[in-house]
Image 1 (tube, rainbow, N blue to C red):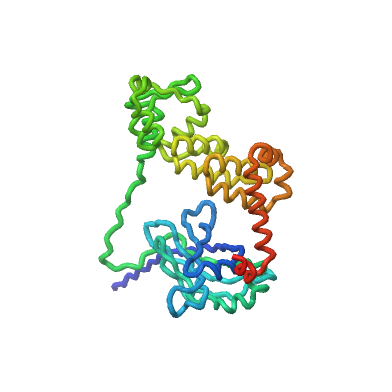
Image 2 (spheres, helix red, strand yellow; image 1 turned 90 degrees about the vertical axis):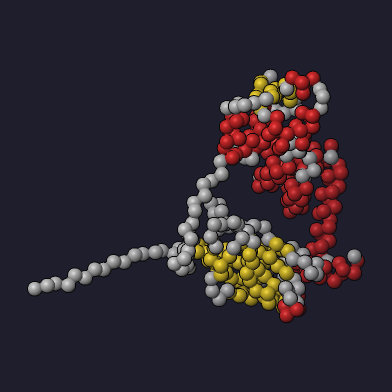
Length: 363
């Protein structure tokens, strides 16, 4: 007697959905609608959380993207990261009205495939005339608040055929680590930097490639150039070490605690990327007590992004900031910054009181 053997097997492939939300408020949006014809405005970048490397943004085009949508406000979700595989996401837009409620919601019909710098959205999100006619409700205080909800597929999955080429696993580039070892272990050095009485062996080629100031220093026919021994008198020891770590590796892990002094060093030695990193760290730490000090630093070292953020913060907290010791220092030693802060405050006050039509007549 024979028996027929039956086999059974099954697999389980989970597809997890990451849900996150983003709210973007644009002040004086009526001015943008009436004055910035033919342009667009982009939001700051955002992600689903601090550990998510996927970066997104929103983009608004006030006159649509083509002849068909020229009378509409176009709204798009953009993906800015550079992943190995496409990202699939579904999204929804709406406007937060004066009562804090969601209005005029539009939802994508399905999940869209996003590649780097790709935008998806609605070219006919809302009619301009309708939006302006509902100004007190949809644009309270001339502000537009856009709310975006995103459902993103976590992990990756392939929609492929049998001819798919196997993916090659490219290892992480270790160049920064390798150059960092040259600095940390003083390997194959050809010059000596002296800071606060301590000697540090370094590499002229790397310093010259990274800093125009070091490059000029090495090119001058001075006694230091002939001996390859250079005295650094304008940097504190810890600031020097942080700057050198950045020169060799492009990283500055200890920046948060000393961004103000490193900003000065980055400005003096022409390290523009480090300078922007310092601006970002200082902006993240802005508070009532240090806002005026941040504005002074920004002015001294031509840090325009930090200056803009510091002025905006001072405008929003003017009465509290004016009571701080750093504000009093600014009044005594940097009166031109006080005048600039008051000018910004007065402009913002006028903008909030006057309707758009009146502002246009005066311009």
